[in-house]
View (cartoon, rainbow, N blue to C red):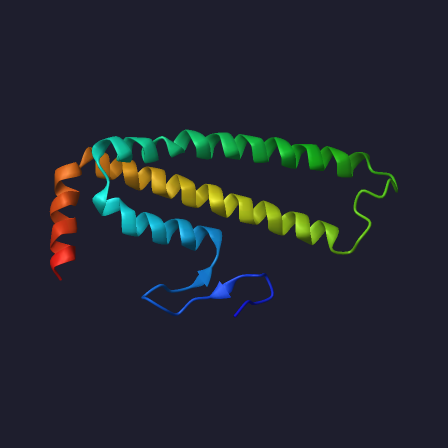
Length: 128
């Protein structure tokens, strides 16, 4: 069932929480991480660069919006009462995605640095 922000509560197959981009990325990562090769982990660890670039891009966008609002003398850039909240919620959602991407990249880097340790832990978990 969808709620007001167009997300759905999931209560099946052990998946918990709201069905949103961040939870989907984390659920897929948690399931895939134990099976990844060192080369695949390197690829995921490279997402730190992607997260950094996304942060820089969002920063430039927010600066541009700030300048637009600052120069707006009844120019009508935010005409609807929903314009500003929608924009801010979109920025918040983008920041959440960047944070999740960075977290996955950090986890991949840690798994790569301690490959054998994680493999042992993953094997123990799979037996239970």
